[in-house]
Amino acid sequence: MEHKFQQLSKRVMIMHAEHDTDRPILAAVMGDRRTLLMDAGNSPAHAELFRDELSKRGYKQPDILALTHWHWDHTFGMSAWNLPAVAHEKTAKALAYLVGLDWSDDCLEQLIAEGILSNESAADIRKEFGEKRAITILEPDILFKDSISIDLGGIACELVHVGGDHAGDSCFLYVKEERILFLGDALGPSVYGGPRKYSSTGFLKLLGLAYNYKAAWYVESHGIPMNEEEFRKDLSPWERLARIVDVFGHDRERVVLEMKAYLKVEELPKDLLQGLEYFMAGMK
Ligand SMILES: [Zn+2]
Image (cartoon, rainbow, N blue to C red; front, side):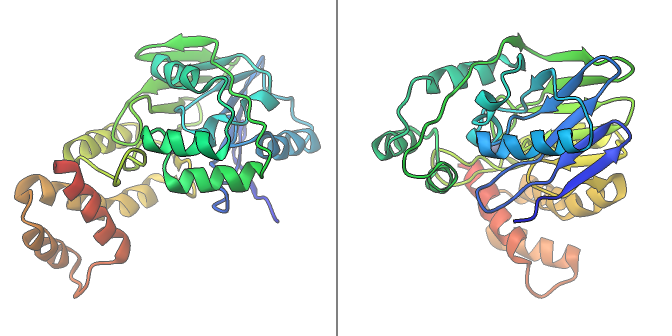
């Protein structure tokens, strides 16, 4: 398997997402004094790949970890790093609940029933960790409520709580000096506890927040980094969809008609049709 790494700027390096077991992007932000790691990876094996690449390039290993949200794919690699971790207080609460579980099949089923995992994520956990699942959950060390700034020496990271449908603890991580905005999964729909959902109002609020940064790079954890223009282009049909849903609400036919007219197409692309279902579910 090939793992792709990208130097996003002089002081920021990322490892790209892998979709096979839902591995999100990991990033190292390298200051004069300290290096910050964004997200821990979905397993120690995932973490190891990034650690190796940092060594290979002669970079310092991270001194501090910042979490974008509690979901397994961003946190289950924590034990491999042994770093002080910064996280939102809700992230800490969610992780504390997972400490000491045995991660057996029964345990996974139970978590799905509780709306803490989905069938898809449980399948990915089985695939990532194998049959004998030794999963160690660690709790974060430094907690914040609204935002926290971490000065790494000549470069600072701001972790800002934004919440949203995907996870109530979702945070953006902004690297001011390089104008790189890591969005985590904040723009995604809810994924646990029943059908995926989007609230049009919540989505538009988050999108507005993201646009306000006017960042050079927009990085969603399971996507490809985009410049501002690409990001706006990528999100514009979704923004329009959310606005139409806001106006026409439950009138699904009307929403489809309006979207087709806007995009000047006969059929809506698959991803938008699926998105429409999420928005409809989000209104119930
Ligand atoms: Zn997530």
